[in-house]
Image 1: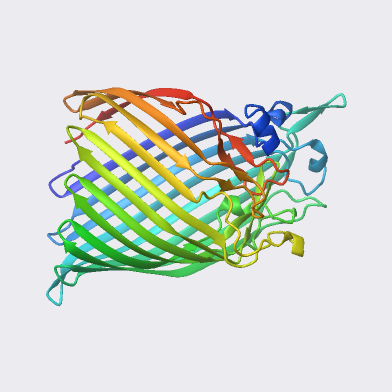
Image 2: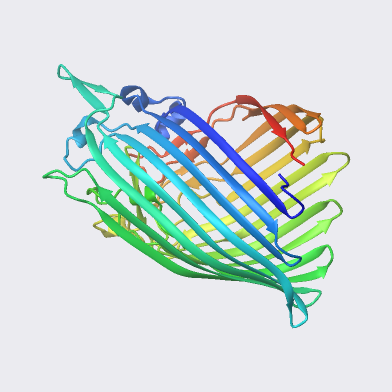
Length: 482
């Protein structure tokens, strides 16, 4: 929305409410025999509900011919309840957190950015300075997933409380960026960010056999990056970039300890990564061809130690490496036809021996060279669409995924698959209003495949089957402000 000649305001709002069953994972034998079975879901009535509402706004103002101010702010709330397939026996342990998870989260953030365009040594330069602040408060509770009626265990109902804590996390990141056009052909981009992340937890569930697990943790890191771009001609450029990454554990990753003890996994450390990328972009008529070679070396990679009973605990691996190739083509042709093709080759491996258990034996050690689970080595995508501004529109797409390792030992894997989808709809326009009515069919040929894996699932139930042929439809109503 344009407020005046120098200011614009963008408002965003969305809300979603989902109630879903949780069929759980299957062993390889169960998946091959009948991928639609859910043997534990019926017994424990496993399910998950989610309600989320969030809103944001973005204000931009041209302060002068060379200066621009951008303010972005958002706020959201998310409520989640999940019933898991955990039998009564383990929950009788006084340190167990129960088989029902109840989460209430409130999150908000603000980003302030100033952009200045000028010259340096008679060469065009753009400077950006900003401050990013984000915070989230979580109330995490755990309950037994059963009640006793006349000596009979009824699963799928909320029982006694077994966990109650308040977690708070915030980050404050000042940053600087610059883009300097050294010559008509060479451009230098550089940036620096200092990231500070603070986490603290207050435990309200304290009993004689379940002590106070309150704690706090702070992480911080300098994050530099740089890129050099060479314009061979107006349609073709190549670039070389390098940068450091910093990934702190999320609240979910801190929630459970791999040794099974109570409290948060405060010993989990952030991972740091160094990435180098060499790429090229070439514009051919109405199309864009891009290619990139990349390598990322990570220390203290955050990996899954074990998944069991719907809970996942995490650990730090030693060193990992991801390297690969990305190819993409975006092409517009004829009248309102669009073609998109992309392929990614990714080799992701451990570079040092790793053991995610509290007590590590030679049999439990994951040797360097094993593939990282949950990551496909090859991924492909292609779509063809007829998309005029109004009237009928339609498209088709094809997705390919190579096999995915399901555990660190690389002893179980989900096979590769190729699936197709089609879509169609009609777009109406009236003055500033637009209505798009659409429908789509996925997995057109009703292929049987594994949609995702539960990494390092403790009982070998790694495989989550994807749905067969399925369809959906909807409508989008929009209004354009002048």
